[in-house]
Image 1 (tube, rainbow, N blue to C red):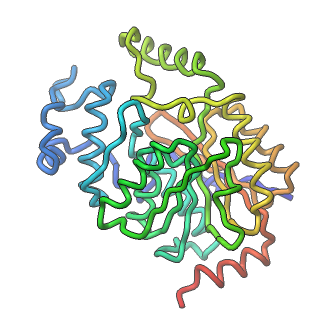
Image 2 (image 1 turned 120 degrees about the vertical axis):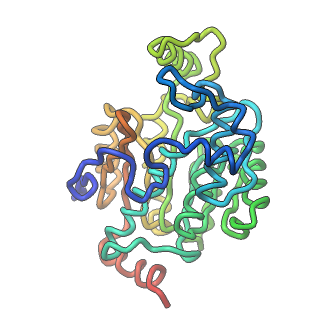
Length: 322
């Protein structure tokens, strides 16, 4: 019988307590660490120092400063037209996922190189692996169907000494496959993660972005969706629902290779359907984990195919300090 948990019964009202991106950005300190940021800092309508978060160059430069300050990442870039993610929300997924591992480990987050994560759709920004590696010492494999994204992510991993030997990104040549071809039969991963494309078409993605800009009183005539983003980063046939359905179905084949599977769910109306998918797939220990950043609420789903006995054996073999 699958069960549904929400952060151990408590609702999240803000960023995760271990997320270093709490409160307002200290733009003076960030500009000192990365002087290029100064050119994007100016007073906002309230007289406070800020940046234009609708300017992709400003957001990319802020990201570079944040990665230097909090993660010791001195080289980070994304090719023109590729997704430039907001770092605080990406970090929250990592920290809440760490809590899911800790929940099975007497409240202790398993850390170090012995813990391996698989990021499906790593993107050129490589953001989840670098945050996870720098926060908990985990190793990562990132996968993507875009060779430019894979090359960009590998470049970030190789150019930063603090990431040396911790991140490997692989090209998925079969777009319909999420795990097959990426997981060797002998490989084991302690968790998987994914931020799936949630629009069903380019037109839907553009319409959503225009609506958001209009609500903010911004000009949407020269729109740049999510500060860039290739087709596979923003939309797929059938949208988020079909993508997660495919992930659930394909994850069964690798149920003995992975301790926990996880995937973000952006649309609340998809939660009930995802639960039904997982029940049909005979998944165990299904958890819906809520996250929040200000007024924005998001969540991800976690599941496994291992029995309680198999989970205990896995933890003893891989998580216990030797």
